[in-house]
Structure formats: C-alpha cells, structure tokens
Image (cartoon, rainbow, N blue to C red; front, side, top):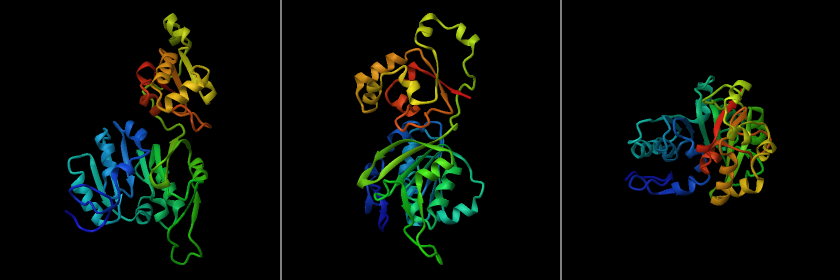
Length: 299
C-alpha cells in the first residue's frame, strides 16, 4: 500500500484520498460511451483511473499529464494492465509553453484542473488546441455561471486571473452540448468542436443516390439535413425526444421508429449549433437509436 494522501482512492494501492472513483465518474458516462477507437488526453490525471475507464471502453491511446510523482506512482500500478495508457510528469503551466504546437487528441479531459494554474485562460485554450472533437470540462463547485478564477496569484501579478469559460470555448470553435451536475456541486460540461466530426462518409446526398432508394425510405424522408434542433423536430416529437434523453425506454422506441430508415446529414458534425439539448451522436447511441440510422457529415 502506497502511503500519503491521494486525490482518488484506489483500493489495494492507496485508499487514503479525497474522492472516490464512483463520484468522479458522475457525468462522464456519455463520453465513455463514445471512447472506442478514440485517443484521449487527460490533463491533471491524478491517479489515472478516470483515463483507465476510457481505455477499458476501447480508447486506442490515453495520455495522462500529472505533476505529483506520488499520484503517478499509483497511476502506473493501477493502470498497468491497460497497455494503451502512458503518463508524463509535468506541471501544466510548464507543459503548455513547452508544447506550442500540441499533439491533437479526439477527446480531452480538463476535469477540475484549469483553476489550479496561474492563467486558467491559457490552460483552457491549450486544451482546445489539443482537442479534435470533444472536450470535457469540470467546473469547480462555485463556477456554475461560467466564471473560473485561479486558486493562486502569479508572482508579480496584482490579482488572481479569472476566465469566462463559455466565451473562451465559443471563440475556440466549440459548442456546449450538455451540462451535467456532478458530485459535490460541480458541473461537467461537454463541449463539441464545430465541424470537428470525421464522418464515415463525406458525401452529401445527391439526386442520383436518392433515386435508388426504396419507396419506404422515401416515405421516411430518407435524406435529412440538420442545422438546428427544429430540423430534427420535424421528424421526431420533442416530448418523446426529451423523455428518451431522460431515460424513458418507451419514448426511445418511439424515436427509433420515427427515425427508422432515415439518413441524417449533420451539418458540421454530430451536434446542432445553438441548442444545448440538441441531438448528439452519444444520445443516439445511448438510447439504442443508432443502429437504425445512417449518419453522415454534410460537408
């Protein structure tokens, strides 16, 4: 058993810690559901066990950055079976200037980390530059309105720096997809890069491709371009969709029937700009709708 106090308890390795893995995973379920085949960057990974969940869900590579050697000692033991995981020891405020052109990952985890550096804005912008598709941000308990202030004042600075997260994320080209209450009053935010989704098909629907479809597919409005949530609601009842997102299995089946045979062409990626409760690829997977729908990027 490793001594000292950790951030996340790891049974059998170091159990004296501030948090449990179960509470730290609250709100991350949708991201873990889409981890298969993805690369993941975990900024401030602590004992690495959150990243381990992404690895176990099929992520092809997980890189964890952590400053404390004790945390990394636990991480390397706890994650030894996940060969696609690797770790680097560095303070984030040192790592950022050393990587002006950072490697890009499909998923970036910035979970309760940016307020621990002198300049939260610089840390968040670095996370954005490192992210190809989905950035998960965990705000401290006092930051539900979007403002995050550094815990410490930089040497020589007159005051602690602070940042408005939504403004920065929008400037960096991300749209808020969902916001979930986490443990201890924290919030988990899903920010999806606009036009960041790489489709399995880059072709938009054409008259020639539509001509060969069956009459049944045409009756189902087989080619549907989605730009706003209202476009989706032209096919699916809003109450059914909201109930499906809330976990109503009957509503999910009704949504699936409404979408049966439909080709959805998402403009700019599998999210719809301008509406936080818009359709997401994770939603479709979660509610069992995805097998019935053909998804494309409308590029």
